[in-house]
Image 1 (cartoon, rainbow over the protein chains, first blue to last red):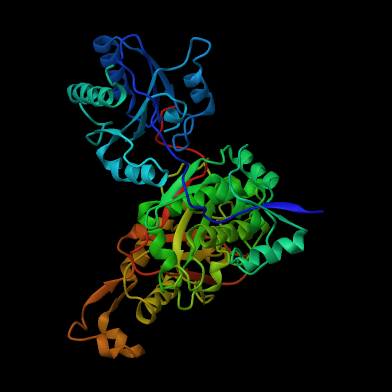
Image 2: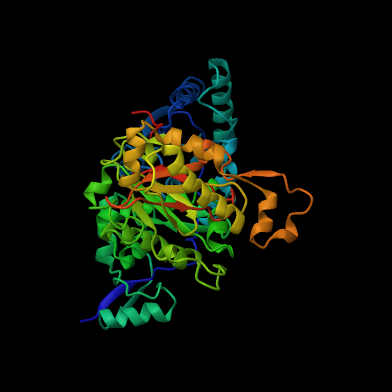
Length: 98
Length: 70
Length: 348
């Protein structure tokens, strides 16, 4: 009866990280804005949404994380990645710290 | 950063107060130099006009980080 | 769930013990072998993903993931339902005011006192009565121990390694107490720190060992507090004169006198703040005359403000005992209170 057990120590080495390709422009693109839900940030994101839709012709989708200190919900990220069905987001703006 | 991993260009927006923590986080997670759009702190108590101006600046900075004209 | 920690195969539970002991991954006591299933169960209960970043320890620039916290929590004997408390406690320790590296590496040898408030105490069967400061129940013991293992394994805070404590104290093994809110006339510690009463919360404090005192010969709140004040003044004379977070633990027999006199925790904190003071020249009474110098009349306060005192209602029903828990070293580390699993200044 053998047991498989996990290493409890800090293991060095973060996975390699490369930026996604950038967009040629914002016109007609769907931009997802994820807010961390902190009180007082909504007017700011409203202003950003106005700026993006009125001045840059983008389509904006707004989402709020359900747990402000955790990474964005799996459901939100799934929605963002949904390119195949014609949905998904072309860019993402995350409100991280206020 | 989760967005970048999904191949969606992303930018994090934060106030000046959070920049050093975010730079630390980016470095530790292997994404040194990851770009952020930084705005003046605090945002929750700014007036309407100040907010509109910060939003305009944020969008400008975000565009610089999200868009690379072909 | 995708766990990314390295895996090892061992023959059985006893082999697992030698495997972990031999690598310096334990506190010397047996550990529960952390299998993937056990670790996943903790993460699922807490609604966390393995790679979720709990925080970053800034001095060593180490990212702390939920997976690593869960592995150490399982080893300590935590059940999935204990895990959210461990996460909240370590998250609180990573906040800047706590000064985690200083608190755990210094020669001063403090331990991390964890005070638990709110409904979670009942859910976990935590006992804030008999033996409140010493392994009072399974949850308290396991949660406190988890923090020790996390410090050892994720931050290398092992004796002689990053942890340079000269002496340390037994609280480093596990130092977790549930406040006895039901049997107390007072507000819970977390509510005093701004957390809503319906929420569960932890408060972490870099703390020395408890100093037990006794006063069964009065019912006057001021006289009872004079004994606590004397113990604080003794710590200032004998260990460190600098102001910081002190905690006092007040069991039921003494609490009854405060209740009868209508004294709130705020009243207690005010009295202690005003009276826990010494003059530098008192050092000459306890062998430190060499450093009194010309400033003998200089007064030092044990508390920088009334809010620096943590009043904890805990302890068994009989005995006019109380305890004073001094800070690691003055005001270098500040106690931090954090809600378990909720954000209170978020929009609905």
